[in-house]
Image 1 (cartoon, rainbow, N blue to C red):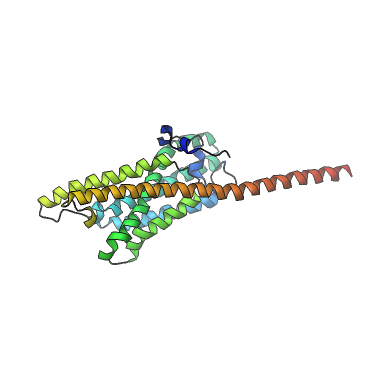
Image 2 (cartoon, helix red, strand yellow):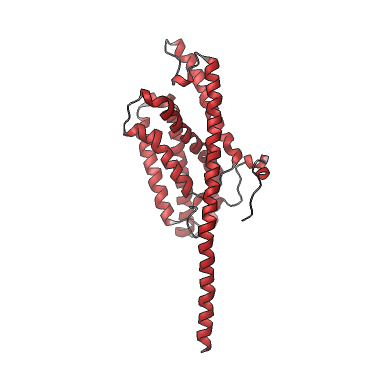
Amino acid sequence: MAKTSFREHIRFKQLGLYYDNPTLFTISQWQFNKSQPNTLYMIYRILVSAFTLVVWSIRVSGMEDATHLTMWGYTIVTLNALLAFVLQFASMLFIRISHKPNKMQNVLKLYPLYWLINSIATSVGFLISFLYWSFVFNDQVLDVMNFLVHGGNSILLMIDLWIVANPVRILHFVYPLVFAVMYNIFSIIYHFYDVNRGGCGYIYRILDWNHPVKTFLISIGIGIVVISFHLLTFGIYKLKLSIHNTTMLAKSRRLAEEEVENKQNLNKAALI
């Protein structure tokens, strides 16, 4: 596989959500046959989507969380898991059950949306864990739900990052960054709303717009952290590809050599 130069990674077209092999969004990086969805990967997607949906449903029952970045982030994580499941399940359905591979192309039209949500969910998920355990946890009681939405989310996203075959592009840092900016704008709107009703004017102490200069600088810092997490995601993606190319391609070559050797042995046996 030819190496891509850094200049190619930062070309404007890399900001887009088009990929010439959409099937990659329905398979695992580690399955041997990459031409169609895999049953084992299907089981994984069912478990992940069910788990995240259950956790989200329990969390959303307390609507006081609706203003929290945690709830925004875990909603994106849940949507990411559900879209991955829909893509994988529908693709497998049309190929293996309906015997209509052409219908799979209609399903794959969802992949840009999934790619967008996945880019946001991964970096924002890591951001939420970082902010919570660094700045918020001291004011909280550690229970199972708090761990699942502030720690379990990143563990799940990290596992997913290593399993999926989704490509990662450097310039896609823009999408989680826009998400973070949107939450900042919401926190400003909330500030004026809450102050006018006699409240403290902030959701989190680190985003207290009663001190605008300090909070603005913190917001800039959070933006830098978001970009850093996306670059970390890109680095893990490239490392995963390197390991894959070393192990899976070596296995493929070995199987091909064994197949050639078996054919030669059969030919010799036929001549005897």
